[in-house]
Length: 143
Image (cartoon, rainbow, N blue to C red; front, side, top):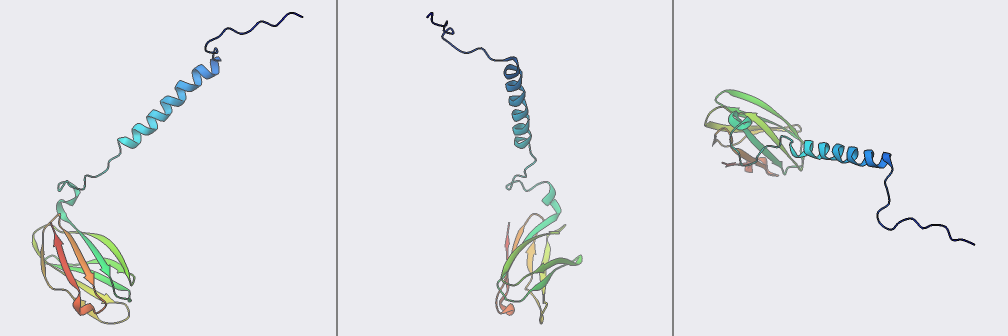
């Protein structure tokens, strides 16, 4: 019985569909990855741009009660929002100039407290630590 001819050694010829399909998949993949790399991610060390008239405030509510917090400044009062007990939340408030800043804490199940004054400038980060005893709340400004 004669033996059947063997295919030549070396790479196998590709079909036309495979030859067209692979480059199309690669182009689509590169376009997708390029779009992700070109995303508009803010530089955390850049103090220009959108923070020019804003202050970032992180509130750490170590009290068991929920509270509503307000920022008090020379331009009046700004409602920041509600914070549940034993949680932390970050807010951004409009702040156009260097001036005194205080916070009013209104506990939903009780009294209101106003913090001591701190001096804040646009672009600063402010931490408010609400203690179990709200009278011991303190505020820290980071530039």
